[in-house]
Structures are given as structure tokens and as C-alpha cells.
Length: 530
Image (tube, one colour):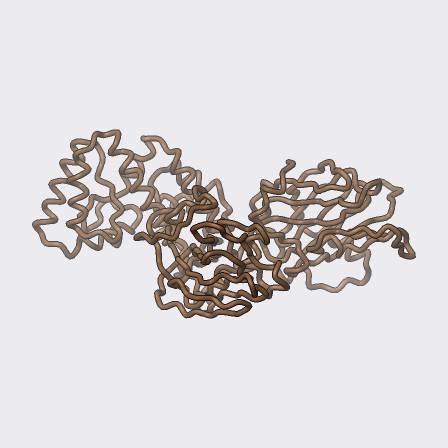
């Protein structure tokens, strides 16, 4: 499927030599070496430059094939990741580009390639016949002297790719756009990691402006090379300030941030602030301000109940590495960096401890169908939703899990919601009668401390509610007292049935997201009963 460059602008190039990608092997590289296609810089053309083999070309180029077949090169990606698209650039290759190409991928363990080969031919035979390659881009026509963009629909986790070119020729650059999948483990809880770092799955979602250099530079894993290797906005001539929104690779407790203005000497911001958000803990998949609705001139600066002020507006110095200790240590999955009024920042580091365990995500992927459906039913009692979530596996990023959950919840019918409601006990039922998930008692902890009179009032209103609407009262009880639940129950009794089903569905959605969040927390073991 052809695509445009704009589709991949938010993703990182997993095949960049700058971040450690390697060209492991090619069956032929007669005219130009395989390593060239991983060069992060644009290809160049030098008209009168030749080598002893022929014309010098800035790319990977094979000899003219005189037998049937194709040529290929194997690439080890910079980081394990999910691939969203590729760019097969053939710039400067005019009469010598391949007619078509295809792409295969594999997910290999570190030890899979640790073996010695007696000859180059033995190594070639190994990569051709003993790797479990999966086709992710079928044979597709290429154009010369241009960028050939293609979307990739397969969302599995890959570590290596093999590019095939038919029948031969040259490719200037191969770019593989995707998202890094970090390998969080229980030991990660004890380390301070850069949760915003590209190498740890961080992503730059949106920014107010990036006139001079792109927003993604802000989270690159290496040190900045020059002023163009950071994030820089245009000069403001009116009110307001610039900002950038980042999604962390994992929610975490943030202890320290580093704001690096290296190389920005006459154009560093005057000051900055940092705001955090953890919408998943509020029963939502998105931060307080939906990034898709933010215009380039809007700003999510105003704090609300879901936001966490990590760093108050603080002066910045030009060409300086600023380190700030964070006192307000609360879990965050998004951070907003605000710079006043404009300028450039080379890098932003957000150091903390992840609170979600990537191994738990893998455990969900590895469950048998029946166990996975049961696990998802504990989060939401709709069989339609649970079956959909099981079928969408594997999930290799937290974002893909939550996005799938929300997408299907938004399209459930009334019968599905009623089925989901039936999996809950009545509010105030401290014995948890009818609770099929095992979580309701903890979620209703605020009721346990209430007196018997309030419990009796809840029971009476619950029955009145059931008689009127035909299903039990559903509310996201986490953090609510018994008195607050009774007030909401009384208010919602005033609605008609159609409006009340919509309200209950919103509450069920919050409960579902919170329970998915519980599934991913660091804990001992993984089962469908917690």
C-alpha cells in the first residue's frame, strides 16, 4: 500500500545507523556496500566519482543479475519495535533501480544469531533458509530517483527485516518507521530510567510549533550534535508560549527531569514548566486535553483535577544542562513541557521508575483463547468486547491495548452494555455477591467505613433504581465515599432510561480502563483471577 511521508512523521526510523541499526548480510553488494542504506543523512551524488568496480553510488547496489532470482539484505533494527511504514528511497538511482521490492520480518532472540559460519555461503544459506521470515510487504513496484513510501499493516513485534529487490539494482536509503517496544521487567522498577526516551518507548505526540527543527529530536537517546539537532520554534510576535506533549514509554513515578539547552545560546527559552497526567488512573485513555483536539496556538497549561504540576515555571539558561528534582512524585503517563515564550531545547529527559510491567502484556498475548477471554471479561463483562480484545492480540504496546479497548467500547450496543452491567454486584454489597471479577470489593472500599443507616439507604435506592431501569446502578466507585455514591444514585434516578444507559455505559468504560491498568501493574505472577 502506497503512503505519504506525513503518515510516518510521528514515528522513529528503526533502521537508522545512528541508533544502532546494522546491515548484517547481503547476498551481493558489488557496486556499493549494504551499510549505506542505513545512513541517516540524505544521499548525495558526485558526478565524476568512480571506484575500481564502477560508478560510486551513495546506497546499496548489486551487480546486474544474469540468472533468475532476486537480491536481498538483512537488517537488524535499532530496537525491537512495531513497524508502521517504510521508505525505499531510490534518489540518484535512475537507470539502475530495482523494478520491485518486498519486505520480510522476523523476531529473533539475542542468542539466535550467535554462531560461527565456516564460509560466506554457509551464512547466506542460514539467513535464507533457517530464519522464520514473515512477509509484511508483498512484492510491490518501485519508482526511480524518488521516495517510495509504503504502509505496513502487520502489528507484530520485530527485531530484524529482510529487504528483497527484484531482480537487482540499487537503493539509496531504507527507512523503517515504527515505535520502540521496551522490555520492562521487575528489575526496571528499581532503576531510574528515561521514561520519555525514544529507546524506552517514549513518543512526542504534538507540539505548538517546530519551524526550525522537528519535535522528535527532543527524545533522541544520544547527545545533541548541533543546534539543528533539537526542537526549536519560531520567534513569537504576540502573546502566548510554546509547548510539546509527550507520551511516556510506561507510566512511572518521576523523580528527576533534565532540560538540555546545549547549543541554544541566543535562542534558548526564558523559562519552562512541566505538567504530568495519568488519565488511565482516571478511567480514561487520553490526557485531560485530547491532543487530537489541540490547535497549534492552543495550550494545555491550565491545571485541572487530572493534572500534576511537576515543575513550576522556572528560569532557564542558554547552552546549559538543567537538572531538576521532582518533589510532587505521582504516577504520570503523559508530560507537557511548556517553554516561555519560545526558543529551542535540545533534549528532555524524564527519569523515573516504571509502574507497568511489560511482561504482563506479554502474558496476555501468550494466554490460551479461553483464558484470555476470561481475563478480559473480568475487566468488562461484555462477551462481545472480551472476544474482540482476545482476537486483537498480540499487543506489543500499552497504547495499542488501550486504543483497542476504547474503540470497541465506543461501538457496543445496548445488549452488550446490559450484559456488562450484570457482572457487577450492587453498590454497597460488601460481600461482593455477583462480583465475577473479584475487584469490586476493593473498588467499593469507601462504602465499608459507612454506618448501617447509609448502607440501608443505598440498598433501598438500589432497588428503586433496578425497578425503574431494569438493571443495577453502575458507577466508577474508586475513590468515592458511600455518601457520594448515594448522592449520584439519587441524582441519576431522575433520568429517563435511554439517558441513564448512556451514563452507565460511560461509568462502565471508566471501570474497564481502570481494570486494564491493574492488569499491567508490577506484581507477582499473572492470572485471570486478579
